View 1 (cartoon, rainbow, N blue to C red):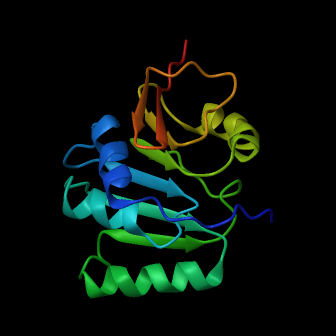
View 2 (view 1 turned 90 degrees about the horizontal axis):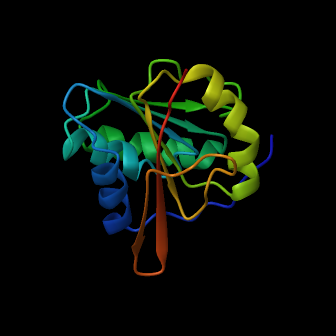
Length: 153
């Protein structure tokens, strides 16, 4: 399992990613490489997502994020899967968030194209998905947010 170094997204970037993705009440948000769980918690608490699912390879990060989720009383709406984000099914996602690397996004692209339905929104912090045309690119300080919408023929 290839690891991407863990760097947490600043809270203002997390909010901006979820705003740009237009997360709405009743939706399902996946964070691939969910780190400390802050995107999951924000999606449910502030954006009223029905469910948030994080996929995290590192046991320490998965464990810590579950502790934060329990502290927030959100364990009924947030799940953290300790596993390989390339192997975890994401077919029920309305929104997918990423803070990986360009090469990890490139490796993930076939999975996104195969499993995500038409209209699913994908938002990536700092790294684009090569071969996809972003609907929007927004800069926040030194951070760049890439926003994509899956379009199937």
